[in-house]
Length: 358
Image (cartoon, rainbow, N blue to C red; front, side):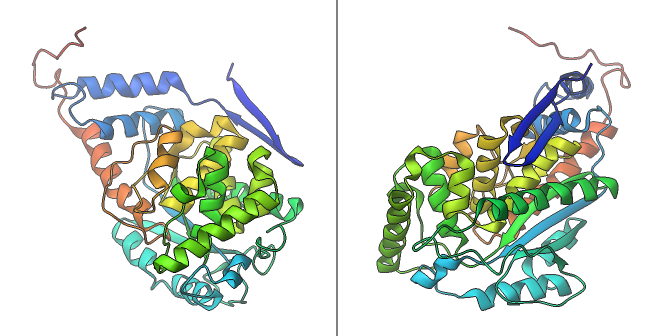
């Protein structure tokens, strides 16, 4: 009988299955049978083993890949914490819908479909290639009032969950998450500071190119909000409502949806790993379903990854977002899976296998 995970986020009932340890052990044995020194492919072996547990079979399938990119604006931009404004969010979202944005080009090379989703942009972008799930036209300015009401935050989380269910029904085997939203390094730094109980100073970087003076201002805005809403004593959901973003909430929902529907979720950079951390705080059982891809250059990224005991394969000094770091993992996974599936085994070449030694 399968063990199940049960949680509740407000009115949302969460139920999912524990990762399949038997499938993982079978995958480990398959790797051990490949004609090579034991564990010599390192993290590549561990990734395939993890995915076997998620998919609940040693016969791993990565054929159908998709990137869900959540687009949303953040009211705190009004405080001058970014070089850009919400018009950039809508411009990039439109570019994604047309298939010409950075993520589209990179995902195309990795054999993945890109699905941009409007969960809260300020502007209206009418394009058949942009999925419409707008909850509100951008969050409120958390320097003056909470970013979202609880029901709005819940709806964003539920949107992320439901999209995973939809993709599972379409036969998608693995999902990467990305985001587009001016001001979302500010929201992410605020959430990370609270959830890790670390100083804002350590958790906040320049984002998309602030000056040193602008960075000081950004830190002050975050610190004041954490104090105003008494977030050092708050839980993850309340923190998300007060200083988070709709993109973070939707990505957190996607992380939880991975557990509910048995689909591996590949994380991108700083904003997405903060979303994952939020999801893990709310629903700890989703952690085994999450796969890190790369280490962002944002200062807090490493601390967030370490808090979840995640060790990304890619170190490329990236901080673009959109899911661009996540899709770099797809070709690596394809190569690992090809080795796992088709390389000679010790038995096939009549060679004595290596043994695990103490």
